[in-house]
Structures are given as C-alpha cells and as structure tokens.
Length: 291
Length: 276
Image (cartoon, rainbow over all chains, first blue to last red; front, side, top):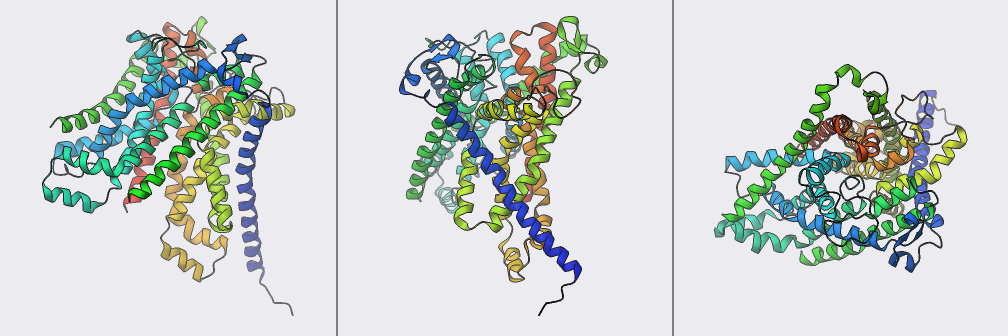
C-alpha cells in the first residue's frame, strides 16, 4: 500500500536529500584539491630531492645544485627571531593573564589596551611588516638587507601569535592553585617561577613551536629585509635567502627552475610536518603526564 | 618589582609597536599625499616614471579577489563542516579534521606554486593567459578553506548539548536541524569567522603574486590578469625611490587599516559571544 505524502512534505524531503548530497560533495572539494597539492609536489620533485640536494650550494641561480646555504640562513633567521620575540611575548602574556593585579586599575586598563593592540598586530598583513621593517631596520638603522634585519622584522611579526598561545596556557592553570598561592601571600615573582612556570612549560613549548612553524612559512615579511643572496651567510649582517623566498624566486623569475622549486617546496613541507608532529606529540604527552 | 616592571614594559612595547608601524606608514605616505593630488590617485594610469599614480585598479583587484575567494569559501566550508559534524562516521570525521589541521599549516608559497604549475595552465586552456582573477580567487579560497572549516566545526560543537539532544529526540532531518538549531545560534559567529578570513585574504601576498598576472589595469572579465595591493607592493618595492616609494607606503596604509578594523571587530564579536 502506498502512503499519501503531501506535496509540501515531498518537497522538503527532496530539499533534505539535496542538502545531504551537497554537504558530501563540498567535503570532497577541499580534500581532493589538498591531496592534489601534495601529489603535484611529489610528482614534480621526483628524482630531484636527494641527499645531495640538501648539502650542495645552488648553481646557476638555483636551476641546479642544492639548497644548503638557504637552509642555513633560514635556520639563522628563524632561531634569532624566536629568541628575540620570546621575552616580550612572555611578559605580555603574563600581563594579560595576570589575575593578581585585578585591583590595580592602571594595570587593568593597560591590560585592555594591550589586548586590543595585540589583536591589531595579528591583523597587520605580513607585507606591511615587510615594508615597515625595510624602512626601520634596513634604511633608518642602516642594517641593509641582512639576516639581522630579517629576523627582527620576523620577530615583530610572530610575537603576537606567541603571546596568544602563552596567554592560553596561563589561563588554563586551575583557579584553585591561584587562590592557594594568594592565601600563602607569596610575591608575584615567586608565584610565576614556582607555580606558573612548572605548570605551563609544555604549553610554552607548544606556543614556541606554533610561532616557529609560522616563521618558517613566512615569505613576504622577509622579501625586503633579509634579501635575495643565495651565498652562505658569514655573519648576521650578511644577506641571506630563506627557503620560501627561494621557492618564489625559482618559480617566478628563473626559467627552468620549476623542478627545484617543487623539491624545495617539498623540503619546506616535510620540515613543517616533522616540527609540528614530533614536537606537538612530545609536548602534548608531557602535558598529559604533568596533569 | 623588577618582574612587574618587565611585565608592564612588554605591555607598553606591544602598544608602541602598533603605534610605530602606523606612524611610519603615515609618515612615509605623507610625502605622496602632499605632492600628489587625491584625484590623481584614482585617475589616469599607473606609471610612476611619468608621475601617474593611479592605484584604483589595485584597490579594486584586492577587493574583488578577496570577495571572490570568500564567496567560494563560505558555502563550501559551511556544507563541509555540516558533513563532518552530522553525516560522517566518527573515524572519517577524525581523519578529515586531521587532514585539514595539517593543511592549514601549509605555507602560502606552496599554494602559489601549486596554482602556478597546475591551476594556471588549466585556466589558460579556457582563455590565455591563465594567470587571472579567477585563478587568484581559487588559490586564495583553497588557502583559507581548511582553517575556516575547522573554525566552523568548532563553533558547531560549541552548541549547548541540550539543544542538540532535543533535536535528536525529535529526530529532526538535517535540513530542519540546520534551519532551526544551528543557523540561528551560530550566524553571528560565522560572520565574524568570515570577517577574519576576509582580512587574511586581503593581506595575502605570495599566493596571489604567483597566479594573478599582475597587470595594473582594471580587469574586464573573470579571466583577465589583475594586480592586488599586496602584489603591487611586493613587485615594485625593491626598486622604488622617492615619490614612488611613498605611494607604495600609502598603499600599505590602505591595506593595513581595513584589515586592522576587520580583525578588531571580529575578535570583539567572538569574545562577546564567548562570554555570554
């Protein structure tokens, strides 16, 4: 026997089916295209990504040879920028997440403005950091195109992200601990060094890893600050080309550099993956054992 | 005491950094604003050696590319977050979330490289040269998709469990659930997430430079090459001097202000939602 279904309900059923179908279809779009990116990188860099590729210097503007000096200058720029941005990020995160100074109206209002400023800094496009870094460090302070100028600019760029990550860890410390420490009457420095730090080391490390992966991936802030030179940097005042600029240059300006561009892209991707997965798992496990 | 001074100093440092960035942009673009009449920023051609500084095509390009990307991102990420949260079996949902997490960390240069070597030839087979508005929008769309989907999934999971279990007990169909529970509850949050992504697409440089074609003329169709503000700065900054450089600083300022505002309002909105 057939049920009588009114037309309006039938329409609704059709709509529901259409919605489900389009949801499945839309899930496929990003998955397929993202897999295609990786597939493209793997295919086009086939045979180019060898051990020699990592240890040789680039020949003929990168068409042949390897990327060793580029990896070295990437390492310099990223490490230096992390070292530079760590102290202010720590201080800022402590200031924002400080529960002890709620009564102090000056600190309280400062905290609100700092939070707004940090939102603003995350919103500034990286190319703007690039041109401002160029104006300040390369021209005004006369560092020229150098690793120092690049890492200073990059440090300013990743600093707000680091602060946000630190702030999250500090906020996740249980309230009981804070009340207990308050009842003991310890100073805010002791509270930081004996209580907060012990609880938040894995969180801090995760924040640094986050900033690190952002710093490695960055191109446009370094375009006008750390420069294009693909020689091995000898000091901090030398110009050094980071890996993402190398990819850009090979793909855009060097004809016949596509395969090496793809190989360098694959190196960059593997580097990011290794950093994220290895450090991420280690510190997450550590955090679990700590709690 | 020293510890507190350190905290307050780094707080003040945050505010001064933002102030310094804005003031340097203002100071350097002041030269251009003073010597170029406002009208000539929006008429004529872009040829700095002849004293013509029309940046309107670049502003238009930035807006159109970002809006195009957002028009693609909004429905795709909305539907796929529905699929992940309501339709997928648990393991599949977990896997796709992991994939998207992984993908949201891919540097923009690699998206640009993919666009240059895969997408541009495909678009070029329709109408040469493939480097165009369409290609730029598609690459940007792909770049922000993973993080948008993840944020959407997060906000769908933040719906109070009473409402979800109530809709389960009524065995609502997917359409009714979306219409009656998810959509009214999450619309403001979706809008602020899209605002954040709009700011991100406006500020993106490398992926766009590699696929947009970079010709400073107003495009006539979707398949014409286009130049965005970010690409404009990236391409001309290395050899710009004097008035030219100052006008580039002005375009940096133009780029900076809307994304600052978008970020500020989106964050404020998200915080307000979180606290209620």
